Every structure is written in structure tokens, then in C-alpha cells.
Length: 444
Figure 1: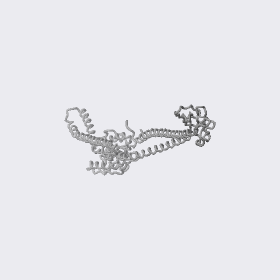
Figure 2: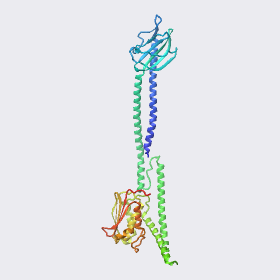
Figure 3: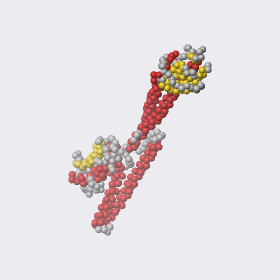
Figure 4: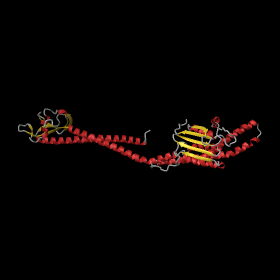
């Protein structure tokens, strides 16, 4: 797709080429017409001078007065010629013609004829022929001039005009490019703020740009506001619904034993209610972790401390030591909510099993690496794979739904990452390491 600058440049170039071509053609025609008019005017003056030099000799023949003929007509093949054809068949020719004859038809009295013919030495002659009568003698006076010097000058003028137009074209294109770059510079701030909106560093575009772009940026701000409001309303609604369902589900589970049904039916119903309770608990947990940061990009150094503080408050009674070892300052390309859900589940799981200490490390280089370790009892190697399956729990006495690591596994698969469960080398409990590549292929 062509850029706007390229489109404007190509459009201007096409328009200028058309205009400059017309100008060059018009200037060429004007110069040629002016040059020929000048030559024709000079031929008329020479014809008048020759007409004044024509006289009748005592013997009745026509002659030219001595000293009345311009010297250039005396030089052989000078490019200036004349020939006078009298009605009695006699002719007077300029010496410049040498042995060349201007073979032209006679012209009636008072008539004027102009032609371009070939002359001696491959010359191109502009010829003026007119019919006259003087002292009772009728004749046709023809004067001619070589157009070669004029054509050479006209060619030089055309090339000069072409060079000037090419320089002017380049100057206009360069000036347009500079003006466009200067004008587009006002859009750089808009582009920067749009990138910051995409990265979650701001919620609105403050620089609306030039007047032509302001309607677009204003509409983008309106859409951003609508999306944020809808996202917040959706989260609140889901959280409120999950919270509202939690109480009735607990009562239904408590009252299940009083219902008249077989033990198999009671077990099946309890299993279904437990499943609903797991989903409700998951949405409540997501609502606690997500906060109000819709549409943001995840920045570990900015976002993880708030999550850690929230978990410290949730498990305040246990006085857990949650240590943040390393947090990257860089902005990641991953969604804020997804990463908080992933980290929240990892830390929540660690808080349930840890005795005293939890360590977290988040680094960002070629990939995002999240490591959460605890000093809990750990997990046997043969049970680690099963723990990632949805709803699997290794200890029914610990409060929870078994969805935490399963949710983490879903997110890791979504981002084409890897998750490993190992023994924590420092703390002795479980260490969960999640690796997410920065270049994530788009899911079909």
C-alpha cells in the first residue's frame, strides 16, 4: 500500500509533468512563431529596399541601382538571397545565390506569398514572394533567408527551457516533501500516544493533531472511552454475579443431604454443584486480580508489586514472606489481564502451600520468564503432570478448587509457551517456571 506522502508526490509529479509539458510546448511554439515573424519582418524590409533599387534603364530594361543592395546579398551562399522575375522573362539574382535558382511561381500584382523551401547547401529557406509594378514594369520580387541559425537558437532555447523546467520540477518536489514531512511531524505525537495507548501507558490521546486529523483522533478517544466503560461494567457484572451465586450455591450444597434422593443421585448433584462453585470461584479470583486496567500491556515492575500487596492482604493471617527477587522494567507485548491472571494463580497456589516464604522472579529478554517458588511440601514428580489438568487437587484438605494451575496451563498454551514444575532449589518446595515467547503466532 502506498503511503500518503508517495501518493501526493506521484499526483503532484503527474500534474507538474502535464503542466510543464504544456508550458514547454507553448513556449516552443511561441518562440518559433516569434522567430519566424522576426525573419518575415526583416524580409519585408529587405523587399522594400530592393523595390526602391529597381529602375528602368535608358534602353528600357530593368536594373538595380548601384550601392542600394545590402552587401550580404553579394556574399556567396550567405543565407540571404533575392530574385526578381520580370514580366518580359528577364531575371535579376543576388550574387549570394551563386548558380542556384529559386524556382517559384509568379505572384499576381499586390499578392504576397510565403513558403519554406530547400535552398543551396541543404539550407532551409523562408521565402517571401510579392507581385509589384514600377515604372510600368511588372515583376515578382522574391527574398529568402536561411532559417538554420534561427532553428539552432530555437533548439538551444528549448533545451534551456527544458532544463529550467526540470530544475523547477525537482525544486517543487523537494519543497513538497519537506512541507509534508514538516506537516506529518505534527502527527508523530499522535502516533506516539497511540502506541502508548496500545501499551497501556495512557487511556486517551491528548494530542489531537492538525485540524484535518482531529475528527479521527476525537472519534478514537470516544471509542476508547466506550471500550473501557464496557470492559469495566462487564467485569463488575461478572464479579457481582459470581459473588451473588456463591451464597445460594453454598446453601444448596448444605441442604443437599436433606433432599429425598438416592445416594448416587446425591453424589452426582453434589459433583455438579461443585463444578458450578469452581467456576464461580474462578471468576471471583479473576475479578480480584484484574482491577481496572483494561487493554493495557503488562509491565512487570509496574504491575507485579500491586498484585503481591493484594495477596499479602488476602493471606495476612498467615504472615507469609513474599519476596520479589527480580522484575523487568521493560514493557511486554502481553495483555495486562492475562498476565495478572497467570501470576495471580501461580502466587495464590504458592500461598496456599507455602510454609513461610515465596519467591517470584519475572524477566524479559527474548521471552517472558515467570518463576514462582515456595517452601511448601512440593509435589512428587509423577504427580506434576496431573496437577496441570483442570480440577485436579493433590490434597482435598487445603481450601481451593484445583483450577489455579489448570488456568495457568490454558494461558500458557494460548501464548504458545511452556510451563515446567520442578523442585525449588533454594526453598525446597515447588518451583513453577513459565516461559512465553515474545513473537506469538496468531491463533486461528
